[in-house]
Image (tube, rainbow, N blue to C red; front, side, top):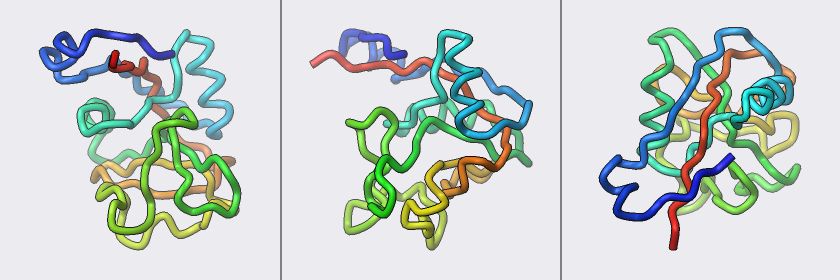
Amino acid sequence: MCVAIDTAYAAYNDFKNHYQLVNTAKSWSNALAHCRNLGLELAPITSEAERQGVMSRISKTQSTYTGVRCRKAGVAHDWSYDGSKYVKSTGPNKNPNWCGGEPNGNCSGEQCMHIYSSGCWNDIACKNPYPFICGMGICKRE
């Protein structure tokens, strides 16, 4: 779910979203279904403000799923929240939030992303159970 807002409003509110931590460990697909049952999505991370919003809900010892995943098996740079906003995983524009050496699964067997309590990102098998963050994405109006 994405809520369109005016650019001025977004700047005023620093792109903050509403996030809900679910401490029950589930696979990525079951976590997504849980969030959608609440009328939300797995938390999007398309900006630093969204990353900070997610981090504000994670405990110091917790790793959680987010809504970012690899969209095409075998294409290591194709990580996205919604299929249009990409999280670079290779090259000079690689997102700095990936943990050192990550993502290392080349989207084969590790197609989901979770975030460590330290804030860095890791690719992981989607069947692994983790707590997760539900959130409502904010779409910036052009």
